[in-house]
Image 1 (tube, helix red, strand yellow):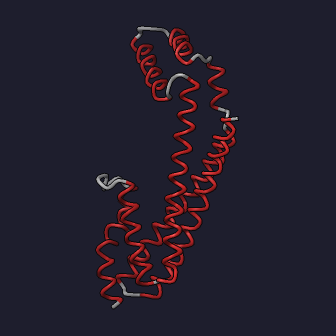
Image 2: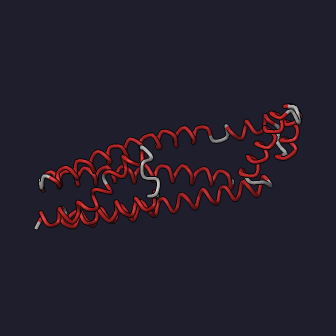
Length: 212
């Protein structure tokens, strides 16, 4: 039975284990991030169902919690962006586009750097010093987020290794090692969720402070 299951799962594994590595090398740009997540989820659900059914519920709960945290994080960022755009009277995209236009005019000799600075200050209503202060406004939070993102990157790299091990052990029909790999995977996904929750809390604090 396990050999039959292995053959079924292998067809998915060929895509799901190799794809993360290929993505790092930009070899398969036609598969986007959302599609890859769903395919990984489908594969993992099959693996836990057939090799470690006792942990299936834990895995499914982790996946649902992870998706919920990401939805909340996206909503907070969108709300914060809307508040900032409303207060500024312009969007970050508009400011970036206008700044690029001014840089091109300086390069072409149409205006001087000083003229560009004055025009940009008129557009934003902020001096360079005030803009610099805004950049430093959440520097501690950004440092925390950078640290968490680095940990998430390491976590992702470890999960890729575990996925490769699962694939190899499926090829060898080594059920015991596959089960061990699934326990490792579950632990890494738990850590991933915890790191994402830390990010969510930081962004929630930023939003709360902005409102206050």
